[in-house]
Image 1 (cartoon, rainbow, N blue to C red):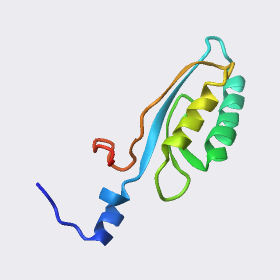
Image 2 (cartoon, rainbow, N blue to C red):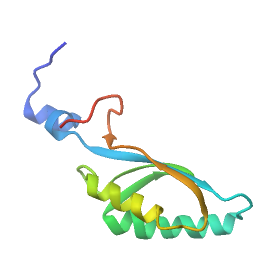
Image 3 (cartoon, rainbow, N blue to C red):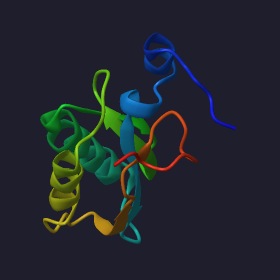
Image 4 (cartoon, rainbow, N blue to C red):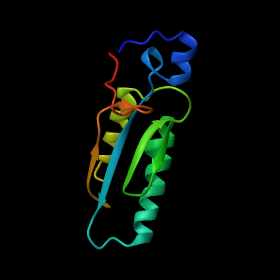
Length: 113
């Protein structure tokens, strides 16, 4: 069912040309790593990889969603910078996954070209 929405309503709903993108991150830590080491790593991750790229993070130490720190979309370049930071041999990590860019407000919707 097609809907005709005004530009103002599309902006308010964050749809069509106002779609906002982000991505999910899953972190798995090495076996036997104590809570203090995880906390120190996570603070460094937030400071350098997230805030250092103008992004925001919602979640916990093992799973979360990354979006822009203000209104708008995460770029593919910002996503790649976070993934590159994680891939720089962080000694605390056993592995990680970074999802493709997805719609922040309506994750079931496809990403606009």
